[in-house]
Image (cartoon, rainbow, N blue to C red):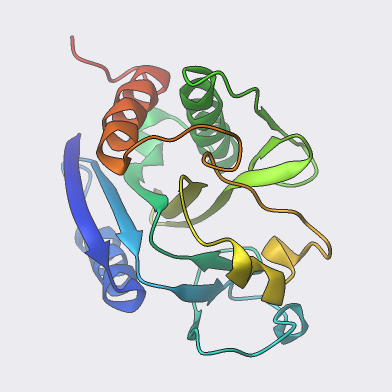
Length: 203
C-alpha cells in the first residue's frame, strides 16, 4: 500500500483526484492511503438535505458523491482517504467502515482517550460527542472517501450544521479532551494502526 502525506489541500481537486484514481485503477493497481488536511469546507453527501445547513456563512459547500449528510472539514483535522480494492481483500463496505472506526479507537486509546463506535451512526464517539466522521463510496469494487479525525481544530463551524444529519450532535477534538499532539505524529500512528487492522503491516 502506498502512503501519501498530501499536507493541506483544497477539497474539490482532491475529490476529483480520488475519483479519477478509482475509475482508472485495475485489479493490479496498488492500494493507496492519503493523509491530509483540508482548507475550511462543508461537504454534503449525494442524498444530503439542504436543511441540515442551518446557517449560511463564508465557508463553501461542496456537493459530493459519498453517502451521508453534511459535515465540516478544516485545518487541525486529520483526513484519511483509503483508496482500497475491497474485492481483492474480500471486504464489504461495512467491514471497511469497521476497520476505520476500530483504527481510530485504537489510536485514541494510545493517548488515554476512551472512544467507541455506534451501530446507529457511523463514526467514533467520546463522552457522547463525535470525534471522527466516516463516509465511503464504492465503484468497481474499490472504495474512496474515508474519515476525518478531529485533532486540534476550530469546532465552531459545526454549530452552523446538523453534523452528519443529526440535530444537536456535539463535536469534540483531541485538544478539548486534554490531549495536545502534533499532526505528523498522529498521521504516523494512524498508518501503523490501520495497516495492522488491515493485516497489511510490515511482513
